Image (cartoon, rainbow, N blue to C red; front, side, top):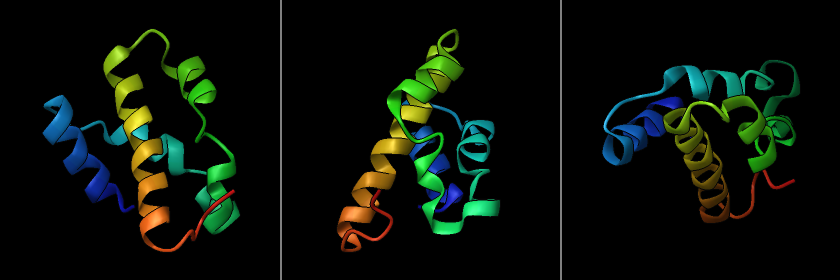
Length: 80
């Protein structure tokens, strides 16, 4: 998903955007391209990063779920 869509999901479900969360999660795309989800896209990784910030943790978990749903809809593109 595009960051614009992740932020819209944040607004809808969490009441505000967490652009910094999505930037951190997708930063590996700069060097890994479409396979960037092998990093920073597991519940354990985001729990370790955002354990002290429940709102950002929720945003990161939504990011993971939304990416998985988007991949499934697009025919499995981006699967690990």
